Image (cartoon, rainbow, N blue to C red; front, side):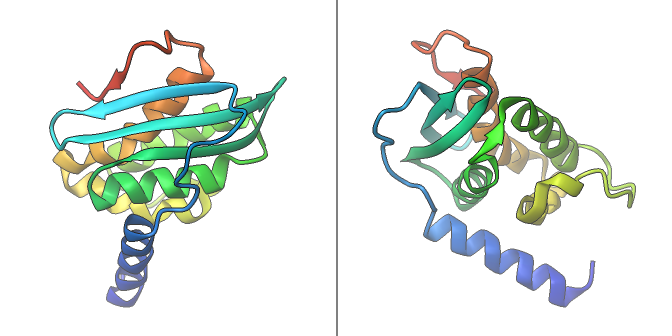
Length: 153
């Protein structure tokens, strides 16, 4: 990746980390899922408003590192108004993006802006920060026990 593109990606992450979008408690939510990363101290609550097979709206509250906040903010922008099945596919694509060795193949085509987080694969301790919200999303969509927090451990 050239330096100009790397700098642009870093700006997007910093912007979403400092000024996360959809950072609020969602009124009338259908699902609420807590998540915690004990390694970094990231903690968030993800709110989803679902209608049959679609995610109508989403938001979050919490705190954490810039990677965690940016990933959550970008994830929510991407999953709003998508089918649940598409969001589940996005989970798989995002997880592959941040954990698989860079093969040069564009397997993350549906991720859009989330591609900026692909560089965390080079920093294994940051992968859990980037995937925390995604694990909360997956647990929430799978109707996992919502009284229990999802953890990266």
